[in-house]
Image (cartoon, rainbow, N blue to C red):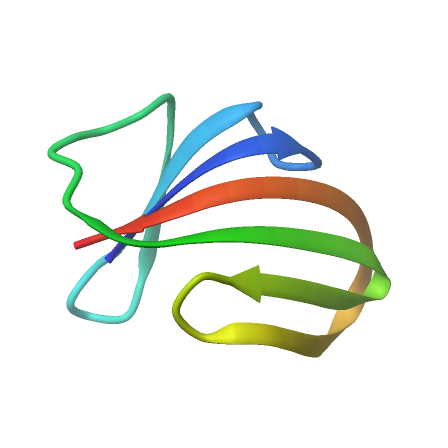
Length: 78
């Protein structure tokens, strides 16, 4: 899957994060195609709590071990 994100708090304002078959991730600057729409989400990371508003999966609240402050709008692609 690919996560194409626009927002504040990541390495780049626009980035593509690709999950590889072996479980590792690759982060690249900009939008890397092809893009096949799967879902749209908004992620708000405040301290150790992440709120995710996903078009397909609904609303989730996740706890993380590190503190961050992010506001991300994203697209999940196959």
